[in-house]
Length: 307
Picture 1 (cartoon, helix red, strand yellow):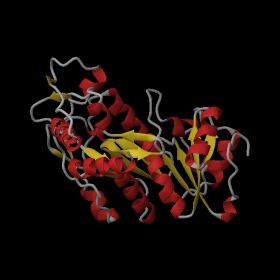
Picture 2 (cartoon, helix red, strand yellow; picture 1 turned 120 degrees about the vertical axis):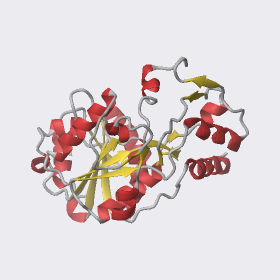
Picture 3 (cartoon, one colour; picture 1 turned 135 degrees about the vertical axis):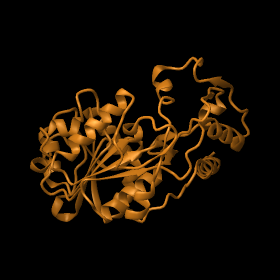
Picture 4 (cartoon, rainbow, N blue to C red; picture 1 turned 90 degrees about the horizontal axis):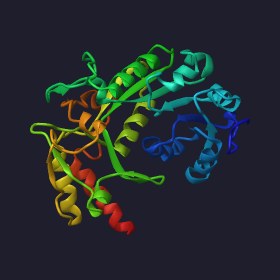
């Protein structure tokens, strides 16, 4: 197969899942998809990186640099499931753009597709609860890019399910992790305070379980929020993490005067609570880690076992 680093079985011998992007969340999907009998092929922007990831993750890899190579074209034609976690840019969604907006022509066998979006599409709601059918009002360029990418997927003819993700955290998976313990131990953590501000979070394996539930209950061109049950002030989270590992609580800074990047400051411009009621009702899903305390305890326990 041209452009493919690791040989895959023919589609007649099993189902094929194509992962556009094999970042943190996609890596949490690999074991679950394998358990369901899928041959998995991921994408990377370079052949060298693809070779490394194929060996590291134990999956097939093909290059996707914004264009559909012959190898990727063949994989698309036999894909039963397609999941994209590649973020958009100012030019739009790279996957749908490469297909010329016509998903069905390039992936005729796909019966389920997923696009990982973000809750930034909602903008600021003054701390109120937010649901999937509300009018979208992004307040950042990232949010507008996500909104345009969602529209591109919905208009592409794909049997797409859109997942609007809260802030992702979790343990090491496939060499990647997202949690505050390293920064706390290094003395690099800090708490930026904005009174009344809350942040929504989701444990990475809870994302994976919701996506797998969707593949069993497909409902194309539908949207789900994925967040835990307890939006919380960011300083409460970092303080609890410090307590778990016996670190000093990080220093406090006012969000107005704190020396932080424009991107970091932008996270404080939108205050909302993300409802996960639809995913629970429609997918029969419940987060294993319903709040940051349960999630951080699990990560700390896993680190302790491996140390």
